[in-house]
Length: 284
Image 1 (spheres, rainbow, N blue to C red):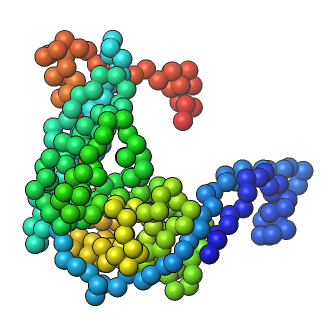
Image 2: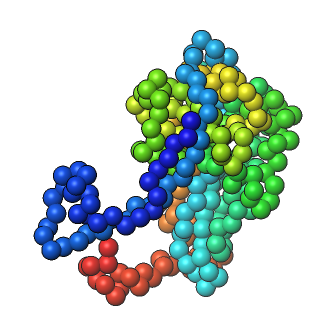
Image 3: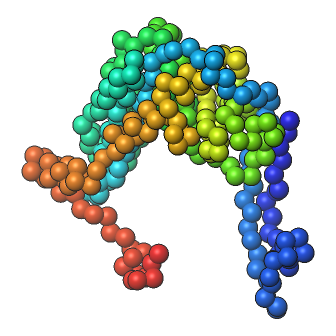
């Protein structure tokens, strides 16, 4: 099934009036820019059947970054990762202290923090590992993550969840319009991409499963995820917790600035915003 979207165009409001009975101010022409959405093909789709769930533990990993300010050495960032393990009704949370990065944040530093989190779960076997973001981007970062070898040795299955894929204009078959389902994306960047809804009425998400498995196995994995982890907001709860614990709070930013100045003699200043200075109260 091929789902199409309108092409990029500039539509006069007078044309919209004929289509939608929109009010038009006489003598004026207002143009709306419509961005070109991604056109994709949706293949087989299956309802998520909870009777097929196989009990497994859930592991979620997330990494957050924040810009602390600017110094004579350039920009200063902080990065932190967290890991959440759900097993037999018990939740265990681990997070690292913020790592200070002088200069711009790079893929290699995010890769390093992800690898640090993987060390925390090196003993976990036969589990679902959740990552936030696009798996293709994670696999292509400079500095190997070592994910394929880790997953193969531990018999774990990786499920990456991308929130950016939400598109309100996607039209689904009636059977799957409001129910939990998983469907194949036929023209994705990899054969492991799926369109899913984890809870009735919740937004659509894109997930990618590694290693590659059949659609029926993906359905079973997602059923286990929903039953073990919970998806109250249409999103895995373990990933929500991992995101919360990976965040670097404003008070921690102040502490990091003090550490840099007192211990290393590096003064970090708030970056000057020329836009605010030049435009005053009309900068936004």
